[in-house]
Image 1 (tube, rainbow, N blue to C red):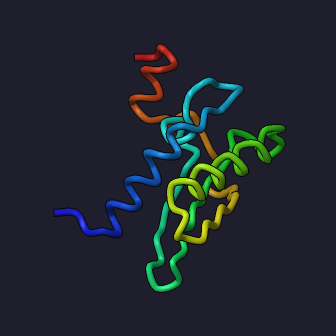
Image 2 (image 1 turned 180 degrees about the horizontal axis):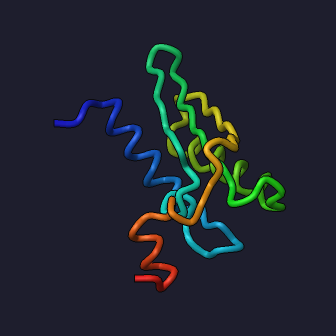
Length: 106
């Protein structure tokens, strides 16, 4: 049986799947850009660590803003903290099986 904390984390991942990387055309979760979603129930804060395919990605502001807006809408009672991280560096091996299927690489 899932804890409430795990349910919120799972919901956050599902919400983030609505954000599509415009350069690749698949969602940021299946692309492997979302590294961690963590809930701090005491502080009522949801923290997301995500990366981009390259540090110079021109869509960085768009993707992080979309992630914040999506989670703000889904979890209005939580403070949303989006942190852009560069380690570990993203590689194509981080793409999920579903992401590979969406890219036509199965």
